[in-house]
Image (cartoon, rainbow, N blue to C red):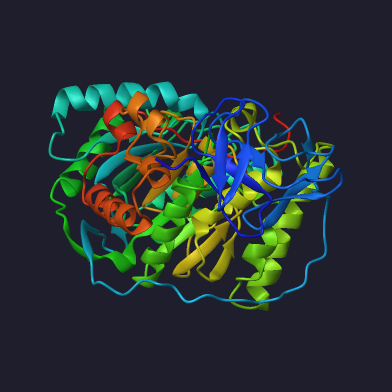
Length: 495
């Protein structure tokens, strides 16, 4: 088993792949280095003397600056490193593009072709509340509908509860309406009942008009204050939807039509070595097949943003990326919060020291492909290839945003583990084998062996097979557990 990794030839640190005690001797490319203290797996060790004020180099880039002299063999972490991040910057477009290494393979998955030409990978019925006041009614409707109909010939019926839809102003109100509209139009839903109260800001009639074109046989609306028995009225509408959805059948769909969101949470020191680069490798593969991926978590691009900017297909997309980064930084500044208040305690425990350290690992999920477009929060995908999406790092909010953009599923890398799942399949990819062993009911794929003896080509083939199976109907672990949630970004006042 490998003992350490040096990611880039320029780096002045290595990352341990196992925990070692003081006195352990590591042979680092011909030079013996003795650990001067106990160091946990995923953490960094100096391999050359680093003076106070010098850059700490990992991934070939600075991840911070030394706050004290660090001798060879010592632990490099939050006690002797600080961020170099500033606030809003001016950027210069310096394009550089790479050729993707993957050949076209004409692969398919079995999905559902919708009337408007879009493709879904699930055939469920969803209740989308326009306001949180009707969450309980929606649950009651589903219970009574299941008892009466027993809809075993569809893939599920869900309500995606939230707390919003009223007492909101400005951007918050628009964000709620936009995300819920995206759910109502998502092709993973064979049918949707939009359920309102009647007195909320997010009015049913306005919501309906904002959808644009939709299939009236599959999307129905009910304002509960306008009927005497809202449960029986809703069940009647669900029966109409069900009679359409139950006849849908899967068919072969080119992999080029798959849209995949890229996300991480609970990262550790192996995230940027195993799971994240593997997901980046898959992203490049899918794009080479004509498919689409979406990278988000803007605060976790800070410190690595120029890598993405210089891969933008043209100056227009570059300028959109500049606004993506600086606008999010301004959001922190306006609320008088530090831009660099990241990574989390769990990240730090796993070996991530600064936001630059985290960002350089996180952005690897986007591979090396050209950035073709930048989406606002709640905006839907328009261009095939690698897209960037405005959303915070929060797991539930950003995963919901990825689904709302039109992603069919999300690849979620994690070093600490999490059980949650969004309204679309959310595949958890472990960065280390210990997590995969301890939480097999959370983890869908283990990238840990990449730190042991498995090659990226071998892991990629396994991951492609897993994703095709999930796109063809195999349930992710969170779906098996019934964990399905949404969360909507909120930044303003509540009335």
